[in-house]
Length: 135
Image (cartoon, rainbow, N blue to C red; front, top):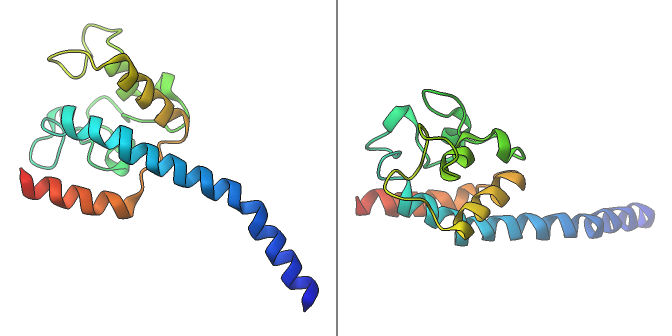
């Protein structure tokens, strides 16, 4: 029995770094990514209005995408339409349409997608509820 407890403890200790990374990714999303989506995207791609059938108010919606395909492909920013749009590299797909995001915001979105597009659901539910109440 003592041997099993030591193995369980060892497994838990080995998992701590990955749990810390997950917390870091969730924190990064809440501090850097959610504000970009909320301030620059949700008005045209949210619950009340979804241009090109694209919503950005959940990871599931981004993975589903809109008329031209998935907006986000986790760990593959070069294949993610969201990233292509915010980079302003093609004339027919530039978001937000009124002006390019700051370079740091684009870099943050790329990092977020590259790191697996972590979207902490529990925090998202509270924020989205408040966002929808404010609109």
